[in-house]
Length: 396
Image 1 (cartoon, helix red, strand yellow):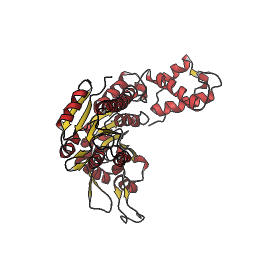
Image 2 (cartoon, helix red, strand yellow):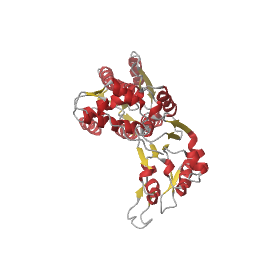
Image 3 (spheres, one colour):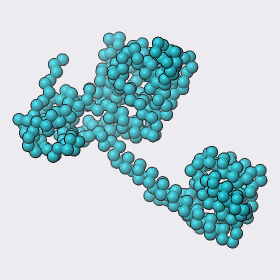
Image 4 (cartoon, one colour):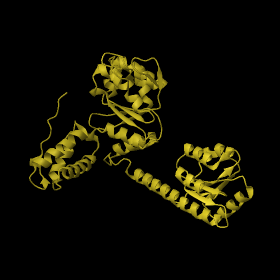
């Protein structure tokens, strides 16, 4: 990767000194200099995010240390190099105690010292940028590593995730139980601009109906019996990040109205409060239900159903993924054997034929349990047909 252009603010009320420094730094291709002649102008220009600031200790209306405090309040990571006519030891000590990186006295060696200091800071900045760059490249390569498979149907899912991950569009993930809806939701969040912000997962099917509202929206002290303290809800926990509402088809009809308001207006109100709280949350939902049928049966609000259709991703059942079944079986063998410190095993060719032919109504979750059971049953390094015990099919 190429070195980043380093933006350097030269802050001094002596125009000749500014031009001299700028001229010397112009010999370096990756240094961009900005001359500033007053403390007031420096404060105005801080939003331009300089990489390094060269600061005269004595400026009209400001001391160097006063400006240093303002710089640190804006961005504590910007290295500041003092260039000063003041050589008083007490001032130098005070500057270093404040966190000044370099204090250079204006004399015949000042320019050489200054350039060396800038080179050192530039090297650190470039190293930091390089580390961040390669971290991003690694992320790019492994961003979907937990979604195993190469079938056309799963590649279509990955392409859909790729389309939506950089947006804030409401996303609904559908698919049978065990198809990997949570993995898809995780991939969307962790490859989005919000990946360093909170990611809150809520399984609506696992929360009793009378607790769902308090869990999602939070409550004020005294809102109901037992509410001894204020508590923020899952939506507030996810501020700035993403919330994954798993099994949204299980949500009570009365609460569907409140969720619709969140989706439409982007606000919530805690139980026991009239104050609206503005949200900045990306919402990802998932269901294993046919929501259209739920709407017909009066179990799901039609307006919420249509609101959830922002971006749809459907995960195919395992039986439609062809050779992915074998890829997943091999992946689980390796994972389970390593976790349990068992010598790695493999399925025989005949076993793989049986595995491919099975219906896998429990999808990936069923396959993982099956592999684990087969490893434990088999006494050999190769798992044969006689070692296979499939889960009985559940009749509808």
